Amino acid sequence: MALRPLRRSKKKATALLPAPVTHPAHAPATSGWLLIGKDGRLGAYAAADGGMLCWTERRPGGPEWSQPLLFEMPEAQHFALGQGPNGYVHLVAQRRAVRDDGLIDVGLAHATQYQSGRRTTPWHPLGCPFADVEHGGSLGQPAATVDHNGSLYVLPLNPGGRISVRAEQRDGRWGAWVELAGDGSHTSLTALTSASGRVHVLAVGPGAVQHWAQTEPAGALEPSDAYPVGLAGGSVTPLETAPDRLSLYGTDASTGELVVHRPGGDTVALGLTPAGGPPAAVRTVIDGHDCTVLAVRGRDGRLSVAACPTGAEESGANWSTTGEPVLGAPAMNLDAQGRVVIAAIGTDGALRITRQKPEPGLALEAWRRV
Image (cartoon, rainbow, N blue to C red; front, side):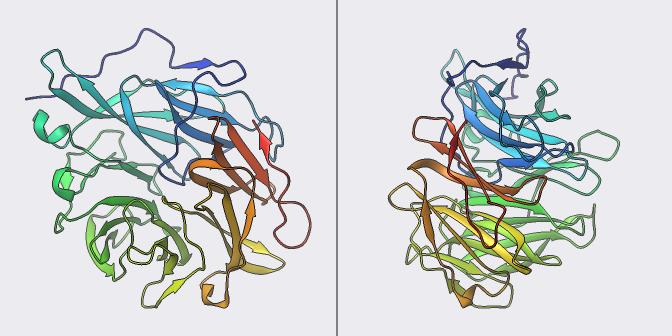
């Protein structure tokens, strides 16, 4: 049965919400929800009742933030974000609507935010890899990434653990749905575009993380060497730690401990047991050294933060616990001044922000409730 087109709302795509937040944000399932716009202002994006909330720095480097905008998307269940070199933020939503006959229509939709703190374009339907309700109703959390040309790639997890991809063409039109070759045993996936412009897709399966990559920018996604490490579904964050070489940070499926696995290297335990979900990770220079900063929610609900030499995590990660209990995965990015900023959703549904102090090491300011 074909999917019905998304209904166009007569309401505006965004609405200014008064303080306090009237639509509490949901626990983030992924860590890539703190993005920096082309004007240098950070934006924090989180799912809420009826759509997605977006908070924006009032000026590059903060510290003040706007009240959130609500990008309305009724019946949305999962969201994904992508951002290209032009700074545009792409929102992907999975809409799941119950029909009058009790069956479910599922489809993906896309909107673009061209300017920080502004409303998005209207939502445009992208359809579904399956035309029948039985299969479409069981799509999983989508992933999204944007290549060096600004083209968006949308990847839902299909029934049976298979992965489809639909990519935007350079002329703005969309290609057809394509299923990636694989064994269909995947439980979660993520995608990113490397600094060279190549798109990478990673899918967690039993005992390994499968990998697809473009051999050249804008090329076809081809199977690449898998990562022979057993990680828990929904726990993986990839980070480019050398040109087109991705380190995977995630929870060991057997021990429950946070680990890192590098191509051709061993799996290194990082000395922490997360509560679940992926860590946030970012590369930066600290005291003249190339470092990777990690933030992850611990078993007590609070965040633990550590910095270690990039590519040399075996030298040790010294964890510090910070802030109050939070929901879901934290997010992290560098602000316009190159300082580490960590974002999290508090148990009250409000945004929390902490920022690196302008002093040696990785000292953080007190958390702010936005």
